[in-house]
Amino acid sequence: MGRKIIIVGAGPAGIALAYLLATRGIAVTLIEQEVQFDRVFRGEGLMPAGVQALIDMGLGDCLSQIPHRPLDAWDFVIDGQRRMRVVEPWPPNGSPPTHIIHQSALLAAIAERTQPLGNFQFYPGWQVQTLLRQANRIIGVTASHNGQTREFSGDLVIAADGRYSRLRQLAGLPLQPAETQFDVLWFKLPAPAEMLCETVFTVCLQRQRQFAFYPSWDERLQIGWIVEKGAGKRQRDRDWIAEFVPALPPKLAAHFDQHRSELVGPIFLDVIVGCAPLWSAPGLLLMGDAAHPMAPNRAQGINMAFRDAIAIANHLVPWCQQGGHTDTLTECLTAIQTERQPEITTVQQLQLEEWEKIALITASPLTYQPFKGLATALGRLGITQAAWLYQQRYLRYGSTPVLLKV
Image (tube, rainbow, N blue to C red):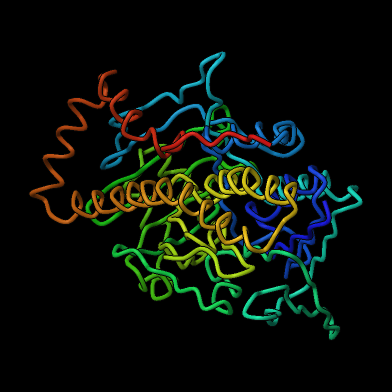
């Protein structure tokens, strides 16, 4: 097609879009500052919309090639007692269930699928230094690797370089932060044998304790503890097992205590939630967390990234097929933001409302005790469980249809 796309960042957004464009004959150069896909922390949850996006992109079989665990249920534990269990829907001919995945392995599998294509070039270990400009347009980037610097030129640069996006900053595209902000501390602990027989996402609440955990692909519990924004680094030296135990059911509390020497963490996650008012500049497009960093609940970062990739491919492939003229590119990029921003706004609002509700419930005995009573009385009812799933529908399935059309 004669057009070349430069993608910076080989996370879920960048690698998925690179695959979609390259398999449709578009020349793609993918630049990633890290040499390997492994990270200290990567989101591990694929909601039904994320799994469906993977299937729609022709990558559904990648799940069978990597460590993964389909989710069976959601448990809600209040003051050490399970008050509600919601079974994860898994209709035979309906949407796929939520999956816990090894994200690094998934990204590597997609890269392996893409690399044999002659129109795809991958540069791991290269860090972008500057943007190349010509006549007020961005026409590429300069990047360095082991003391070597070179220019990468293209018809469009796509910034998929995450919440701290260097390209967003170099392009002068500001990020509008959300009003509610928080941080998360992550831990790993060997999972008890009974928790490996079924995959359950467990939410634990007490007045001064709010955390969640699930058995991960590596047969360890992945534990996330919510903290006020900026407070995480000051809390690293606490006795964390002593913090977890009071909020857990007795058998699980004993397991935590017996394995205290094997606790890994905390790993501090500086959560940034927001959205860039403008996702594009002449010759450049933001996508994924570079455009709209998501909160970690329901792992919406990877889920929205895959849906972004599909929507962008739907616009860029026809643009390239029609000659890739620069005078129509601005309209194309604006259409992408117009299509994707409503869902991003809805999902971010739901994510933050969830944290705000937790903060309100646990702020005072006047709110916490009535909530505990209601959860105890109503949590066992099917209508309550169905209501929770309905309230979660946009986080599970997205708020707008995203279908691959190219």
